[in-house]
Image (cartoon, rainbow, N blue to C red; front, side, top):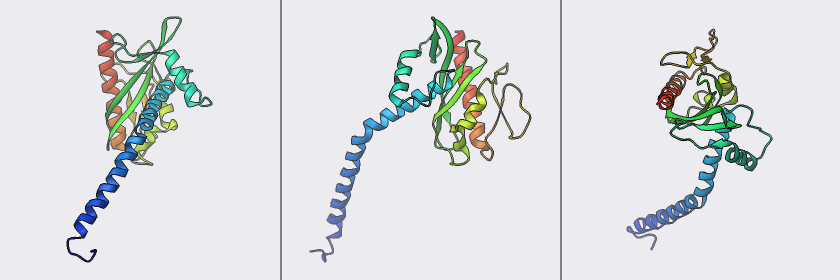
Amino acid sequence: MINKKWFPVPYMFVVTAVLSAVIIGFAQFTSGRVAANETLNFELAVLKALPGIYDSNLSSVELHNIFEQKLTQPTKASGGAFLLKQNDKIVAYALPIEGQGFWAPIKAVIGIKPDKKTVTGFAVYEQRETPGLGAEVAKKEFCDKFNGLKMADGDKYVYFKRPGSELQKCDVHAVTGATQTSTRLEKIINDSIKQWRTKINN
């Protein structure tokens, strides 16, 4: 029968159907775990962006519990930012930000003190930029550059400067060889902060 001219058509149909069923089944089986990992990555980014709360020695479960216990969920009054409080006073805001990178959306969290000008931390939890270039924005070495940064006055708060150039308090060095990613991330950060400040002021 396999020598018949019509045999390849039903054969390929059956093979395709079986493989598709396997892939769909596997995707459904792992979807819960994927969603859980995405949630955990976001929670870790929030904790890393806040002062004195993230501990790399803790397990994922312990970090999740800290997130649940110490963070206040975003409200209209917080401008969509998570709140870290101590004795009912705001210690810091954790603002989720998102925008189009060079290849795909970049999602991150920026921590901001109650003065709304001082950055406590920065963490990227999702990106698909070029490995070794744009993807460096998710590395600790790059994110640590934001610690203690002071936002500039005006409509632009954070400036990405050419690597090696002199920096002011509102500047960070861009990623070497990743001009497009750096430019887009700079815009994402400034647009998000501007929108957040407008919400807070209102």
